[in-house]
Structures are given as C-alpha cells and as structure tokens.
Length: 529
Image (cartoon, rainbow, N blue to C red):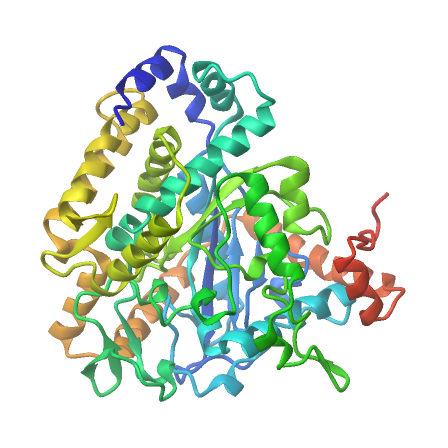
C-alpha cells in the first residue's frame, strides 16, 4: 500500500505536531536472584510497598519476579528516566540480591522452588495468588518466570481527531478508534516477527530451565542450551503459550473489538476437560480459579493486545466493551541484556514508528491460513531468525526474511518523517540503524550475546550474571533526586496502608467473593463512593 497520499494529507493537517503527544508506558519484569545465582526465596521487600496496590512496583507470577510499571508519558526519555529511578530505588532495597539482566531465568531448582506471588490476606489478594497457582498447574511454574518488557502505546487525542477527518469517517469517535486499532493489531501480528529479529535477546538458556525435558535445543557448553541462529527463545515453543492445537487454548478473533471480546468471553466461560482433571477447590485449597479454557482474560497469551484501563476488580473484557480501546500493549520485547533498564530509547523510537505504520496500512481480516502463517513466521524467527537465507510466508508465498524486512523498513521511512516533522530526525535515523541489523545480523542483541559467550568461553548463566552485577553496581552509584526518593517512599507507605484497608473491608468469604466476581458483582474499592 502506498502511504504517500495519506502521509501528505496528514502532514498538511498538522499531524506531526499532534503526534508529539503520543503516550508510551512500559512494564518491565525482572527476577530477584540470590547471591548464589538461584531464584530468591525472600518475600517482596516491604520497603518497596504492597505488590497488591502499588501503582509502579509490583510482582508478576512469582514473589521473586518484580514488575516495574511506568506512567504513560509523551516523552520516551521521561519514561526511561522514571524506569531508571524505579530501578535505583528497588536496588537500594534488595540487599545482596540482584535483578536478573535477561528474559530467560537464572538457575532453577525445579518448579517447587518457585514461590507464587503473595499479595496479602484479602479476597482480592487471594484471587491473584490462586490465578497464579492455576497458571503453574496448567503450564508449569518454570515457564512463568520468563521475564519480558511490555510496550504500551496510545496515539494522541488530537491525532485521532484529524485522522478520522482524513479518513472521512463519521462514526462515533470511540468506535472509530477501536476499529482502527484492531486493524493496527492485525498488522502488528503480520509483521511482528521483525521485533524479535531486531531486538530479541534470548538465544540461549541455562540447562536447568528445561528440567530434563527432551528438546531439540543444541548444547552450547555443559551448562547452556541454544539454537545457533535463535533470536528469542522466550517467544519460541519453550515459552508460555496457549496450546490450541492440544485442545487447551484458543486463538482470539481480531476481526473487530466485539469479535475479540466475544472470543475471550467464550474462553473464560467454557469448561476445559484437561483443566477439570486438575480440580478447582481441592480440599480447602483452590488449585485454579475455575476449570475453563482461560481462568481470566489475562491468561490469554498474545504478542499484542488491545487494552482499556480497568476499574477496581473490573473484568478486562467489560472495560473494553464499555469504553473501547485505550491503548495497545506490545508484549514481544525481550529484556535487553545490554540496556541497564532492559530496554532503551532505540527500541522505543522504532516501536512508535512501527505502531503508526501498522495503523496506516490496509488491514484485511486474518483467515485461518494466514493465522497459521503468522504463528509459523514468529516461531521461525524466534528459533532461526539470523539463519542465512531464512524464508518466511507472506500471502501464501515464501519470501526471504531480509527482503521482506527491507521492504517494511523502506515503507516506514515516510512514517518516520511524519513523526519527526522533517527528513532529518530521530525516528528516521533509527530506521537506518535497524537496516544495518538486516544487512549485518551479527549486530543484533541475540548474535552479540552468543559472540560474547564464545569469545569469553562462558555459559549463558555466566554472561547473565556478569551483566546483572554490572547493572547492579551502576544503579548503586546513582543518587536519586530527593523529590523522587520521597515519591517512591510515599507510594510505598500509601500502598501498604491501602492493602490494610482492603483486607479490613472484606465482608464475605472467598467462595462468595469469587462467585460474585465471575457474576459481574465485584465489591466496591474501600474508600470509594
């Protein structure tokens, strides 16, 4: 599709200025690791606040898997500054533990060694822990401690207004934005393989991760498994997926927002025989929230998802149906070993360009054949992305990865100029940087990691430990501005107080609470009207 005419109209309409108010937010996961290189067994540090209620410092699957959440800001540098400050504050309270510098985990001593995240004694907290117990029962706990970075993106309101005018669309603005973003999501799925190629940083894993399971991974050394041309094992078939082909998962429908919501609603309401065999409440303990295809919407794994900010205990599908799509969450970024924050400005600038490019392109619905091709392309790039001559499937025909990638980057040039407001700006310069990785795969993070391991004759664990320690020391040398330190200390105290309020406000047992939640009758947040 030739974007030239639309880009010209948008430029004349003032889109470059409007796009400066696009918002970016990040969610960055990182494992706490003990001094012996194993997963930390300690509780979430109390000085960091309540993982249940803190807006920026929480946990994911495991008590040892910290998640740092930035606010959504218009300046990507400000987003990274906030994430840096959060890292500095967290590191100050970790004692002799480290934050692991890669997506693939440290030494794992078996599933039983992985503690589930704990959020307190309230019903809401218990629900979060039971959900995680269910994930462990369904997919295995080891898979759940793979870390990643989520890129949350929303276009500026002023841009949406002028874009709707240029599209001559007279529908309700919320409906227009949702429809346009579902098209963007479909295109991000079609070309999303480019993200792990350019930024994948998990080509190898400690052999403790596979727990003796048979795989076709090759042995790099006595302690490390890998694929020679892998980019992102995290996105490969050893990572966390919903296995539709095994009868225990789904593929959501992205034809429209309504179709997406209906497909997820079906999954969270439909029993699954394999999960029924696990049991729900066994004795006095819940093993999962329910025995349905998905316990809740968040269980659905996808590299990109439509999102709406939820109210207290509001179902994500209800939020989407009521208020449309607020932002799009891209989940395919690995934790980048070479960035102290796990992510850097290079990635944010590229992804903003990719988002706008995917929005402006035509986006037909995805049929069954194309869905299989999309999944296969992702798997090929995850396992073999840097393999010379690798071919992917596009429009039912094989095409060389490097040719397709160059076409995409060439097509993004005009979009980058629109974002920059001219021909010489950061987004366009970023595209030139990415083209170098297409021409020279050895420049990708995945290749650099393997090259470094060969040059230093070190295992994946040794590489990750060395960089984890380097980042730890660098953060400990940073002094937080007094106002930022005060902010994090205040948020920690407020979150702990909020957790106590929620715990004291519970008036029903957990069985009743859970039944009310799934019936759409969540209790009010304490202190709310």
